[in-house]
Image (tube, rainbow, N blue to C red; front, side, top):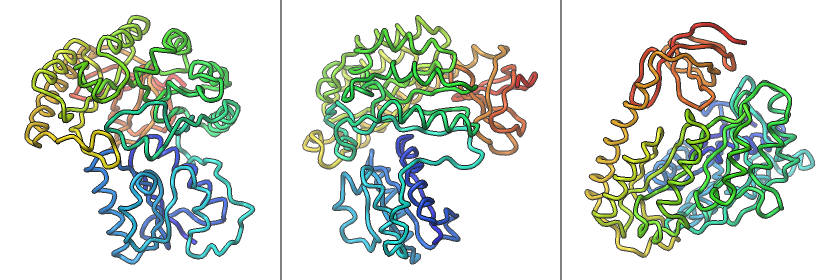
Length: 417
């Protein structure tokens, strides 16, 4: 039968969708557009209330137009009650994707021996997410993802190594290592993220590794080894390290396991070793216990750190979490704090990006942009738009001609490969 797959959420969800494609294709079904589909699999996210409502709205829409729908991912794992009254073909969690084949309407048990969860990558893609673990070792008070993903379960290094080797052979340029917290990879199997990076860096071929989000509480325990692993040319000098708040009291209330000073130490050590490297961080504004003074501490730390890339989220009460029992702040307070932090981010980002105008760097094209443009990344994972339609995976030398609030604009000087 013909199956359409819709994916919401983080890079880990997109890695899960590669596994889903493996299951569906391994059973002889065809992946297609929604318009052609006999059934739709929705791989869900529920990290915030807004995301949850968006996903549930899409599920209702699909059911309303008569589609056979299977719901996968974090909502069935963390909030099965939200799906109880819906007319679905079934649900699967991130740890039971192999059941998808048995839920497809015309499956009827056929091809069972061919069912596989080996991940696949679309033909021609040059970017591929690779899940290295699921779950984490933290217990953040606001986070519903822990309920969806559970405790840390790391994939064997050999299995990840084989998958990356195959992806590189197929021409994938950017390997995105992903999990709920990459820094704790291997703690349950006697391995580590630096060890994994060293193994993967030894794979023959021209490619880059982007390390996904890591929590400060776990990153600080492997920091020296991590810095050494990052020295390899195949590893993007990019660190996604969410701080969430500049107030130590709020960080304690959130059960983040780190202080603002510990975060500062990790960030400073990374930039000391990689002066052109990019630090990305996340802030949650309007946590129930956040006072005006706490927010001002966040704003002060933000101005001090001047992170290159920032994700700002208004606190969203999630069911089944410890923080859900706390009295929420008024929405207008959260909106105002988010606005102030966003304005500061735009100002800082413009200042940082304009420093690169006139510089020359080597980039690889990773995505086709709009209006005959191409999106490329340099070795520090900066986002560069080139106003030409270029081949995916091709490498070029570009001169930075302009900068916007979130990206650079480059002009191709020459092709390097």
